[in-house]
Image 1 (cartoon, rainbow, N blue to C red):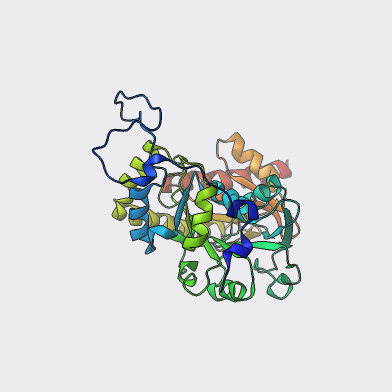
Image 2: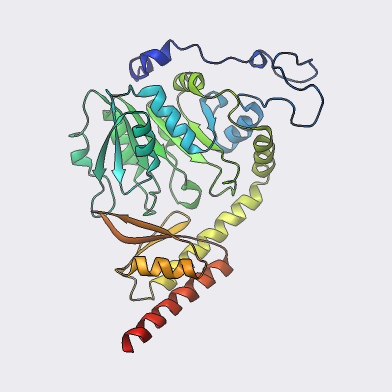
Length: 353
């Protein structure tokens, strides 16, 4: 059984987190003279609910989890940083990340002066399960899994994550930012049996709220207590909470848009695989597709010149010469495909000359 008192940093265990007088009541109809706010009503003159209780209620119902297991962040990046600061002692502990993968795990760890042990994914872009625990020692506090993987788009089998959670004495962080586009079960289902599993999700991708920055952490309620000590008191603003509530209540639009993106993803992948000069077009269970070709930098610059922005993903040794392409609207995808074909035609013509 996980004992978070042995995992969480000693100074965090004893920390008296910032407290607000409004934590002591819920509801309306009270006179607010506690926070030195401007008393004249503008709709924004009051500080937001520091625990986002209404928003958490809605998210909890959608995700099937208790509010006591939720922490919301200013994007998942804030949650990654909060987890590392809560659990990892600087200049002593280490975390394990996989490459290629989401770079913010490593960035946040290094900002907090925590050692990063980076393991290369195998040829199938999966963790090397046999070698994983060779890198774990008494100071390894976290293992980060990104599934679907960014930038590859593949999914780690849930039973493999369970295998790690059962054997690891630290925190297993499962980043599911793209889960709404995938045919996979969430690692949330593992949490009843494995208290050390922490799941990160977001409203930035499938819910279309990247501009609001709302990250979701689902964790054991005891760990949530520690995270709330570290969390800034008013990290999710009033406008963000209101708009997120509005969007989350329109689940039918969300599902319709997700299905449209998934359909476009399969169409785009099919067309790209018909371009023989693209050496790799990966399968994807996210809202992007990874392509690889020797001329990737030239192609990238050509697309930029034609006002099409994609992401270079050259991460040796496992990933070389890659471009990650987000699935856009049908019109945007058609323009992308046309520019790819024009680039190839222009390149072939210049060689003949």
